Length: 574
Image (cartoon, rainbow, N blue to C red):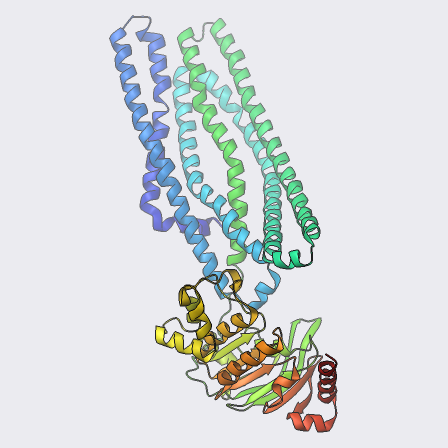
């Protein structure tokens, strides 16, 4: 873990060395004040050397001016180094998240991932800056204090440093407890962020169902867990600080007693004893700094551990020898395909499908039967458990994922639009498209005229998830995006099921235009929309139970005919 942490210093080697050099000079200047104090007490003041007093004071003022500038450099440039390292880690994490498979996001909440990318990395940044700096300054200060205190009185110095093992033992004993407590605290913070993200995203549903009290109740559960986790963290931190502070206070008692005895016995003069009392802070200050640094160290280490948990997740990788696809013709085959999210829950069992190039193939059946899973397997979002999926005769496992997905356009029921302009959302289909191509795609999706009526036209920002648009407008915008992509294979996953009948007719016209000349897989809830499909398959409990044209399936009088007549009766009743 240390080696992986150190690699983030490499791009900032020069700044790091300058920061450490400034820290070294700050540590060296700390020895000046006690040296001058001792000289004044033993020489300048008793001998009434006022000129020497002024000279020494002036020198000390100059050194402190230099120290001020060095501290500014350390605080500003050192922190900026930490921020840049934090930014690099955040970029690495985001880049890695982009490579992770669908399965990872099925089990990890957005809010928790955001917590790792913000709160955790902030503490890592602080550790990156203060860690080496504190260790260097404190180590040098302790070493210098030992040498200098020995020049005053070896006996008193050895007594002080003999107490160091006691301080180290107390620190080590309590450090592990602090580590566990702070890790638990981070988990609780991530939980609160996840709950908050979920509640805010669903605020319109909460208001519609007047369930604000329920959301508050759910939030308070996480809030109480957070309070309890922080209580444990602060309890362990309190034990750590109170115990270590008590040990350093004992140092002062020992020095007071031992020094008094040495002074009484004439083994040290009053000037040296006074200088020793002043200089003991040379030792106690860095020790106290290291003690206080332990909290920051635990925060940073636990944050980096959680960062590595994400970075160590295996990315979505192409199979060895996988090659780009080129332009697909669109012939899709499922060859004895089975799939399970885990061993206990099979979703598809021995599915065989053959969808010729340019044909429209519809999937119908009860919810949870496996229709959407079939759609997700074609772009290789998940790995099949058994069997194979072929496009134009090639197993998709032998095709690079990016090149495969460029050949597939997907229009889903749940449209995701970015909080950006209409133009940017359409351009997401093909980022290098021209303005004319964007407008043509909007026209083909029957939304161009509506866009022109908006105050800022194509520059209109549509809000988070397209909140400023109606359901039909969102759907047409997503269709325009696919028109711009212009893929040979199209997947429509219940693309009109959430729309009213009038809007559905308008959208269906755009979809019919979109499907023309493409191999199309349609998942439909309203069976009236897929009557003209070249072939229809009924999926139930992960299996294909019926397949054929609309007329053939109606004549057969099986599951499809029953579902169709039931929907027809419901529509007649309505």
